[in-house]
Image (cartoon, rainbow, N blue to C red; front, side, top):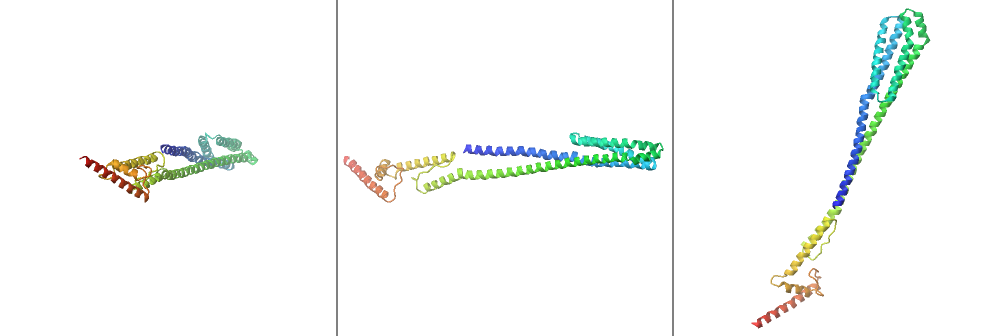
Length: 316
């Protein structure tokens, strides 16, 4: 019984340990994915959109200045340049541990630098009052092509950030699914173990005890010569054997004591006379013929007692 109990406890402990390892690992994955989404991908997506707005402000300001020659149009260009540098630095800090995204950020910075280099001659020509040269440079389309490459680089960066974010969300959902499945499976296994333990306890403990209780009830009802059969395992079987030993001793004491007023020697002789081939006191008497044999034994014992009494009287 102790061995079976120890085995079941070890099984439950192993199941709980395995479930704890899986739950801890997947819970860590869920938290890591959620943290990465909140602290990296979401801010990077916002910064990439702001970066596009920064370059659009620069392009609008430089184009307005070249067309009109009004220096006030250079204000958006200057603000956009400062904001773009700030947002690029922020993006580099956010994706510093992600080489692929960091490369996309650097590609945007290089495209932006190439565009500013392409529009530099236009701005200088306009600042010098050489409108014809400035217009010719604009018509050549060099600056427009360079800015298109900036747009493409930013779009690639935004797509990479969105893809990484979706991968993180997918990993989070997958880890959550495994976590939930593990918890449900563990609960199911534990429920199965409880049911198995209940059934096993009834078979190993309950049923043998019920059988022993029925036998003891039979003995307590008067059938004291009914042997108690030990069953079950370990302590349950030992309890049955102890009960049988107690019953046998009680039967022996009752058989030895005999009826009140009859010496135990003669009462034991009565049982021997009442059983075929001497018999034993533990053997139950058969119904019918056994009663007649006991009655015959009683008559013979009575004759012996009377003979002993007469011989004792003649001596006095």
